[in-house]
Length: 113
Length: 111
Image (cartoon, rainbow over all chains, first blue to last red; front, top):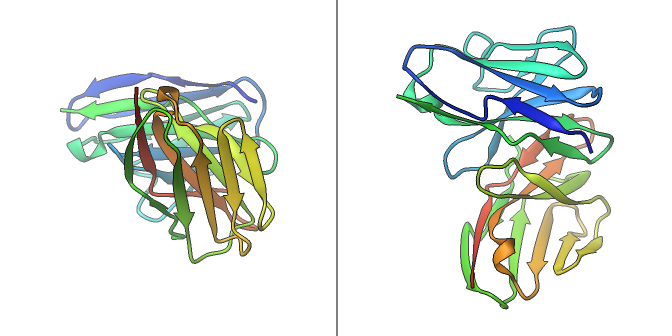
């Protein structure tokens, strides 16, 4: 399966700042997704990162707060903007490889003070 | 939002015991995946089931997809401390590109 690398693996940020998370895949993939996992909870889809066009956001998530880039088929970024303590979560990049096979990076653990 | 409810939410058992985790929904899924997530890591895909009534075995783990493709179960035989983790089911619907994740079951196996 594809190897998915996320940077940074963790960060502690100040309230009001922004952080960009990078996701690099070792092969070209059509479908890339960004998820949030709040402490002790399951995964919630933030958006689908579309190559060459604007990301598709799920209900409750907006582009101004979570801008996403997808310049090519192996790379994407997620920015968490104007952070508040409620944004403290694990942010996970995921790729779809063929039918019924979706894989995840190890995530970025974000804490906001 | 397609809701996938998992039960139990938390489970703490002794090494060597058996357990079953359930994943239930009122919606039909074209496939259902099970993941295990350990602290500090992303979810790792264990298995995908696609046919109603399908049973798949992975060593001591047995996965079943309900006949109506609305529910699934994960049975672990003779649990080991290495089975400790967060177990997540995730359903896919025809025509959708993303997965709907279950509420999660946190398993602790005590040596």
